[in-house]
Image 1 (spheres, rainbow, N blue to C red):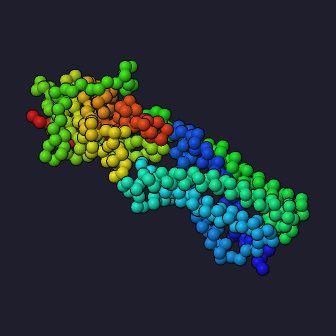
Image 2: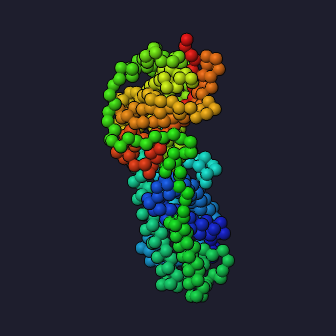
Image 3: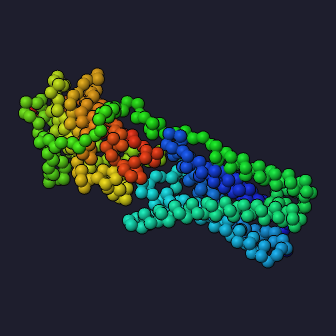
Length: 430
């Protein structure tokens, strides 16, 4: 014959899991209505953190059930005992399987986002899901995660119904087993109060999970301060016409070069290998940082003759790298950069204006995926003898260039704003 009530550890975990699960389910539903600007990323990160917490607490609860003695089941019909067993086993499957499928869902996303538990502790992705298996595993995890949520809700309702049946129809003390300090048998009024407090705990957690407010991501609404982005033209974008001076050829070291502009231009500057051309995109509010490893160009520049400045940069789009092979493959595909049909992107300056203290703003045309759009970029320039050091930034709207089509066109998951940063050295050719 077992003890009259569960251990204190089991009682604490029981009620903690009940409240956390109610909060998590409501938060999951709220995620469907949030966008980046209304805090979807923060809510998503919290949802992941709570999911891992539920997983760990459920494993602890299961271990305590095996380790600590617990009350014997009440007398009941065989069918009722079988149903109770199914519900209890099903609840453990829900509490452990739900977080695991969510973890797998995040781990197999085509654009992986790091998980930081409560913004402080890094949590790894599940390894081993690369290549073709990644997509199928993601779809299976998504279906299982959704199904387990609804199955879990049904099991919780059955669990509550079973508890009420024992307490009120069969007149058997049940909630008393899950109270840390109370008589072994409560009066009807005491039982009603105990159930009322339990439902209040769970209901409050559920309401709070559905109403909790999050801070949105400012980058989803506007470019950060100082980023120079020119508005798109009023007419729809059209394919860029090829220009003779935009001809691209691959050198032996796979870098790209552009044919020189007219010799009447100012002194020519040659870009020194080893520069940096990076980009930062926001995926569900988390930065995805990448760079282009192959790019080059020609620059004709004289600070005393800015009206004759000519800057031409060519970027090998297939060199985009974000430190994730699967993500890079997706980035180069037709939905994003379409490198098979648009191998290079180019920037051609139309004017350069001083902004004081070695700072300049270059305006020009960026051609990406065959679409021309005006672009302004700010840069700092330091010239010492025949060597120049350059660093700067700009930003583009990916939607204006058709980067991200189909399921990726919506800017709720991948923000439209993409920040660009660059730094390089150049030497003057006399």
